[in-house]
Image 1 (tube, one colour):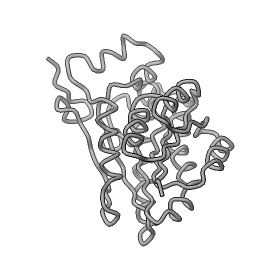
Image 2: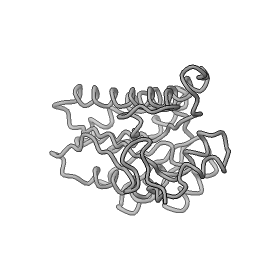
Image 3: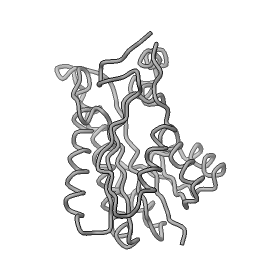
Image 4: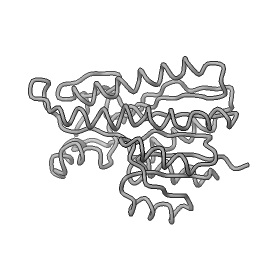
Length: 242
């Protein structure tokens, strides 16, 4: 039977690249995101099934998951950062939005699909974290806190599922040139471009390749965590720029 992969936040970036590569590998791919027009265009291109999904809304998650007959792989990719304010100048709404998408979104999707993942006999959960989950940095308080929470959630899930036929992985990327910085800076393309100026960042396709590799390991092998950085980056805020 063809295995089913679910990818959240799949309308662009890492999510879209992951959906494309999984489809190429023969998975039955179901993609979810809020931008349904972009989602459907991708689905038509790669032969996937597109369903509207807002991971911050429990009703949306329930409706999405009710459409699935099975789930063998869940890629929790939906999330992102908002702003770069200091703790002293932080915005409650930005913090709330980051926790709702990154943390509670991951919780909602995992909780809803866990019975299907277990029933598959070889389920896999891949949570997309960030170097921000490992290394706090100036101006990243809200995103650091959210991704640290995702890391803790992932580790607890791994512990709680020990003995069950489900593998759990956290992949933590550094700088990846997607819409991430543009969203973080409220659509300011010039400010977003400076994040990657003078260096070669990773692409969404690079992270997607790692996800596909994790999902292709033998069932007795669990890749617990993976930190992925561009050659030009050694830590959250140490980047070589030419």
